[in-house]
Length: 193
Image 1 (tube, rainbow, N blue to C red):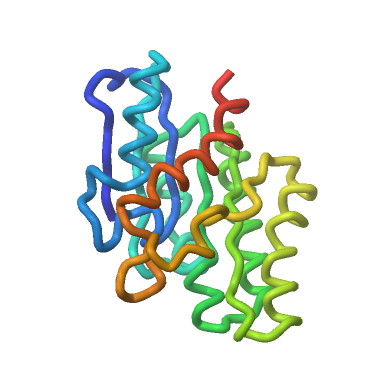
Image 2 (spheres, rainbow, N blue to C red):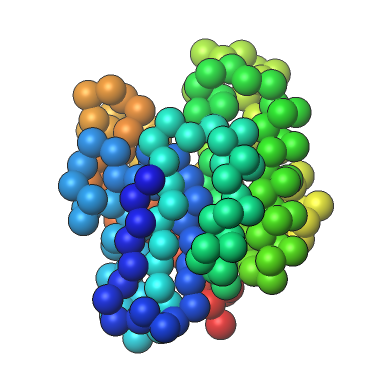
């Protein structure tokens, strides 16, 4: 887990980034990841927030659900950016299990008094049409159910460009991080008003 706190806003309300390796700057310098770029953007716009990155490489929704209560109690975020599910999909875990885990995380964050930005993921077509469709639809369904903002696909504008991925073809390069931040920012900015 990587915990980042902006130096300028220690007293500011927290934005909790709750994700996996795609949010933990896997394979690139921590300062190059989209979460660090988010901190810089908040400073640039003079928005008084503390960013806490509680993302863990390899994290599944099950792992996220098991640690959400303690994480919320520790950081008391005003906004939780929930960006989990990719590892569930890569492991072919049941979509219903992923949905239930994400729902539990959203419920906990809302019960703690925070807003949630749900960040969706998509699976490559080799997982089969039914699985990939069901997987993608979970995010939109949960956003409707819990009335939370949705970023439909974290890697929009990135996923189709091989040159924006590391050799593993799973993790985005530093060059891709500003694009990822833009995807997240579109959903996050209205929650900061």
